[in-house]
Structure formats: C-alpha cells, structure tokens
Amino acid sequence: MITHEVLNQAPPREGVDEFGTNVPLVEAVARWGRADVPGEAAPAGPSRTHRAGPAVSTLAEIGRHVGAAAFQRDAERANTHPPVLHTHDRWGNRIDEVEYDDAYHRIMAAAIGAGAHTSAWASPGAGANVDRAAAFFLFAQVEPGHACPVSMTHAAVPTLELAASGLHDEWMPRLLSRAYEPALADRVGPREARPAPADRVGPREARPVSRSGAKRSALMGMAMTEKQGGSDVRANTTRAEPTGVDDGWGHEFRLTGHKWFCSAPMSDAFLVLAQAPGGLSCFFVPRVLPDGTRNVFRIQRLKDKLGNRSNASSEIELDGTTAWLVGDEGRGVTTIVQMVTRTRLDCVIGSAAGMRQSVAEAAWHVRHRSAFGALLVDQPAMAAVVADLAIESEAATITAMRLARAYDDDTDGPERAFRRLATAVAKYWICKRGPGHAYEALECLGGNGYTEAFPLARRYREQPLLAIWEGSGNVIALDVLRVLGREPEAFEAFFDVVGEAVGEHAAFDVALAEARAVVRELASDVASSAAAARARELTERLALVLQASLLVQHAPAAVADVFVRTRLEGAGGLLYGALPAGVDTAAILARA
Ligand SMILES: Cc1cc2nc3c(=O)[nH]c(=O)nc-3n(C[C@H](O)[C@H](O)[C@H](O)COP(=O)(O)OP(=O)(O)OC[C@H]3O[C@@H](n4cnc5c(N)ncnc54)[C@H](O)[C@@H]3O)c2cc1C
Image (cartoon, rainbow, N blue to C red; front, top):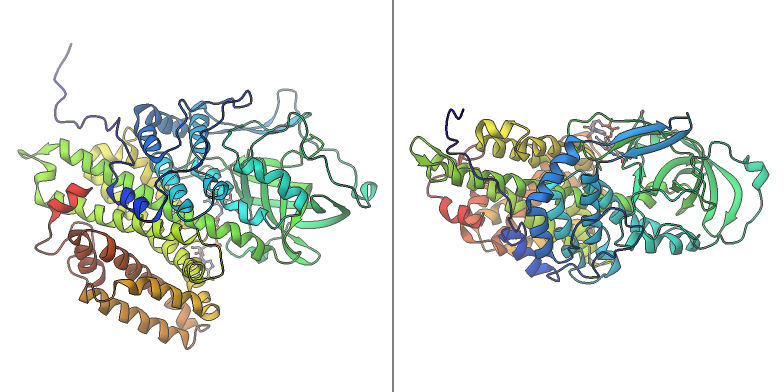
C-alpha cells in the first residue's frame, strides 16, 4: 500500500554534459588548450576485453559519457564492489592477481581509450597537456579511483625516456596505446624459482623486441614508500644487487625488500626505488619478464582505505625480483622526480575535479529542493554557500589548467621554471582545500549528502588522499622553501606570471607585495628552523596570489572580486558562505 507520494526530492542528475556545463573548464580549454583531445579513438581489437561502449575522444563526448547514468552507476559500482586480491589459485599456486569489477574495467577502458593517460605525449605541442588535463579532469570528476593508474602511466613517460633504448623502444608505444588490456600477458604464472644471478653472468644481446601474444598496451605504477619512511625515501631499505647482465634493456639487478604502498598492482610495470651499491636508484620492474614468465612481485594484501576504494593499493614484497636500472645509479630521486612532478600535477587536477563534482551536485540539489516555502537556491544563506563553493572550484580549475599549460613547453625556459614552483604551490593549496570544500558541499544536500546513495559521501572520503600522496602538506611546503633556496629563477618566473594582473585590483596588488616581502624575508635564511616553521604560510600566500591573478585576468568581475576580497583581504568569515555584503551571488550561481 502506498503511504505517501515522494515529493521535493531532487531528480537524478543524469544525462548532463559535464564538459559543456563547466564554464570555467570550457573557457580554460579555449584559452590554453587545443580545444580537443587529439588522436584516434580507442582501437577495437580482440585483446580489448573490456569495452567502454562507444569510443569517446573529444571533450564534448567525454563530458556526455561521464555525465550519463550508466557511467555514474559504474562509478558507484566500482566503489561498492572493490578489488579483491587472490594471492593463490585453488591448488595453492601463487598467482598475485587482483580482481576488479567489470564496472572498473569499463571506466578504465573509456579513460584510456580517450587518451586521458598519455595523449599529451602521443601528440605533443601547445595545448596538448591542457586537453589531456581536461579529459583526465572529466573522468576523475565522476570516478576518482581509476585516475590513479591513468595518472601514473602519464607521469611515467619522462622517466622512461631515461631508460636504455631497448627498454624505452619496446615499452613506450605500449604506454601511448589507447587499448586497455587488463590481463597480464604471462604464459606460465608467477616465477618463484629463478636462475641464480651467478648462472646468468655476462653480456646478452638485445632482447626480442616483441613476443607474439605480448600486449600492445601497458599501464605503469610506482613503488617508493616503505614502512619506515615514505616522504623520506632515503630511508628505503630495499636492496638492488647487480647481476652483471647488461642487455638491450640496460643493467639488470635483483631487488629484495618490500613496499608499504603500491597502488594499481595489476599494472604491467613499475618504477621502483631501491638501494644499489652506488646509492638509491630507480628501477624498471615489469610484472611479466621478456621470456613470458612472471617476475617475483608478491602482493601481500590490499589496504583497507578510508576512500579511493575502486583503486587497489597494496603491500608488496620483492624477492630477487628482476629489474633494470633507469637513469644513473645513485640518482634515483632525480630520476623518479620526473614522474612525481607529473603525478603532483594530476593531484591538483583531481582535486579541482572533485570540487567541480561537489559544486555541481550541491547546485543541482538546491535548485530542486525547497524548505520553508522556497527553493533553497533562492534563499540568501544557501545562495552564499554555493556561490562561495563555486568560486573555490573555479579558482582551482583555472589554476590546474594554467599549470597544465606550463607542461607543454619542455624547453629550459620560464614556463619550466614557473611550473617547478607552481606545481608545489598548487599541490599544497588546492589539495588541502579539497576536503573542507567537499564537506560543505555535502551539507548542502542535507541528510542525503551523508548517505552512500549520493556521490558526495564518496567524494568527501576521497579528497584527503590527494593531499597525502605524492607529498603530503608539510613535505610540499618544505619543497617550496627548497626551491627558494636553490632555484630562485623559479620564483622570478612565478612572479612574472602572477604579476600579469598587477594594476587590475588594488587589494591584489597589496597581497602580491606582501607575498614578495615574505619571500625576501625567508630567502635571507632559508635553511633556518624559523623559515621551516613559516613554510606553510609562504606557500599559502603564493597560492592565493596565483589563483587571484588568474581570476582577475580571466574570470568575470563578480567571481574575481569576491575571491580577492574574501581570500586576500579577509572580508567575510572563515567558513564557506560568510560572504561580505553586496556580493552578486546570482551571477556567480548562474555561472556554476
Ligand atoms: C591510498 C594510498 C595509495 C598510495 N599509493 C602509493 C604508491 O602507489 N606508491 C608509493 O610509492 N606510495 C604510495 N602511497 C604512499 C604515500 O605517497 C605516502 O603515504 C606519503 O608520501 C606520506 O609518506 P608516509 O606515509 O611515510 O608519511 P611520513 O613521511 O612519515 O609523513 C608523516 C607526516 O609527517 C609530515 N612530515 C614528513 N617530513 C616532515 C618534515 N621534515 N617536517 C615536517 N613534517 C614532515 C608529512 O607531511 C606527514 O604529514 C600511497 C598512500 C596512500 C594513502
């Protein structure tokens, strides 16, 4: 028997074009990008076991794809049916396989097929990283967990450039492929018994470039963090012993030790830090060896995480694991930092994407829900909250896209210097702003927001992760200080970019002068504990003037002015929605 009619609940937010409706993103792509993800659509082949539905390659197509009900259902399912580890098969053989729900595979196939991983490398040039960032943003907005391997594969490319030519030439085309082939291409399962290094000494000639049946595509991960130290990778104890074999893939080593966090362990290969005789070094560790047997890569267990549940994050053990040196021995940090800087960029993009999801869901709800006789959106207290959330989201989006633009130019010039500092500054600030933003957006949905039936509970659990991994808050703020001590040209380039808005808003000019003054003050004794204690203050000031500069130049006055007054001048309050008098919330909401 029907006891009541369901009234006053917002309709499902489905069938939305997440690109076209995101005005700040569309504008940023028009300004800095090539306006579309270049390249071919995902190839359909026999080994492509998981289909994403129709291939999506343009941003408009991606926007509609991720806004569709089917993709949203997959996003929910990939998180409510999380990956399962199978260490052994039913007969007791070690297999180290992670089983994912088909929903996860569909999401991955769509993202990889759209080039959200490596399109910027496959077709480089002005705007390539912006278009790729926008594609990554759209997928991560609705399902963030899969973005981890997508990001790591993008980021691994410049480190792989440093590998021996045989390794590079065989693997690079796989990384650039738009095919998604989730299964490992091994023939005989894990290889626990292996020849001792002594049995295999001496130079070997180049390996066969490709075995029949080998995968056309590959995903990559990284494994740096150990139990005794994550940020401080110098504390790594995993050992790397040279075998004496030197082949087309470079110098071969055996790794023994563990990694405490290793995400996406079903990836095809990993960049791993370990202690070689010459010091901490970077190694390429494939899960399947060139002879088709499994490398030793024991997945001990999966982490039980606060969020990010669709993504498997594991603890692994390496035991005589075959690896090849990448870059110079003893220069592991310098080698892998090429990868880390790009995963930091993706943390910024991912956090901005999360803010967009939060604002979009909150704005949708308040436009459909009434309380006390009026739609919530028409009630000033709520309009101020959502407008304030939209401003934060727009500031994050424009910063992420401008930062991505700086990755288009790899020459040793001002853009590269700018991104050295701006990546750390944005990673610190935007990722740290994420959790509070998600919380406030969630509350706009009232009790619904706190339930798993709506996506913002998931988003709330996701956002802190982007602030922790790839360098947590203090580590990043101290990195900013390190740049100040060692790379003053990065500060010059940063202030050149930020200074483009000078003269546009008096309060911005004041804040910029104050930020410069703090920089000068700390530069005089950058190695002191007093400077370290102010690293967060420095980073926050830099982040705010960067965001304000971009908004003042490119956003409507209604948005830029409120940002400057609330974030730089201190007008209003400490929480979202405590805006100063006279703010045009209607104009801001119309844009959101
Ligand atoms: C879900 C998840 C997935 C992950 N996946 C991977 C992966 O695939 N590969 C991988 O290598 N790692 C991965 N990590 C590990 C992650 O990168 C580390 O957890 C992170 O870098 C922090 O290192 P830690 O945990 O050792 O903390 P610590 O380094 O011990 O830091 C603890 C706290 O101390 C602070 N701190 C550190 N140094 C200083 C200092 N000098 N001054 C002041 N404060 C300081 C940090 O900011 C942090 O707040 C993952 C982590 C998570 C949560």
